[in-house]
Image (cartoon, rainbow, N blue to C red; front, side, top):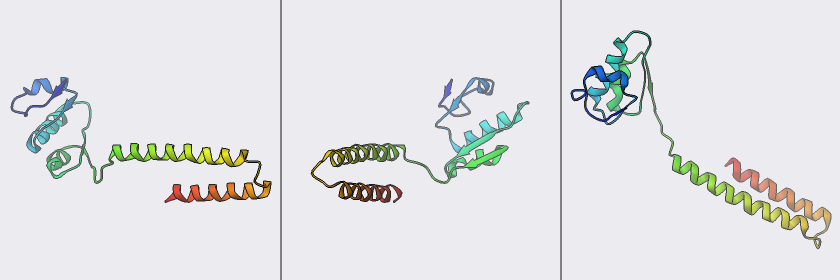
Length: 124
């Protein structure tokens, strides 16, 4: 069950059946954590990323404050760019390997340079 109301609107007896609490006020977060902390058989771990989580963090047995967040869309975008670069790199490598007009030694020197440049890009 998902709960999106305030702690005043939801009877405490429903709490054990709720898997996710969202859109809770700072006060509600603290009330919810304290309720579960009083139940026998376990501890409470609370993770929060803002000042509105302070009450929940303090009330929990273990409070995890998330200092920075990761933008997943940026990671996906960078991974897509990297895949495109890989395709282009592989096309260039295959073209160079199959080009019989370039002497053997020169060809492998060029392959080495391309690989070094690619590795520099990847470590930046």
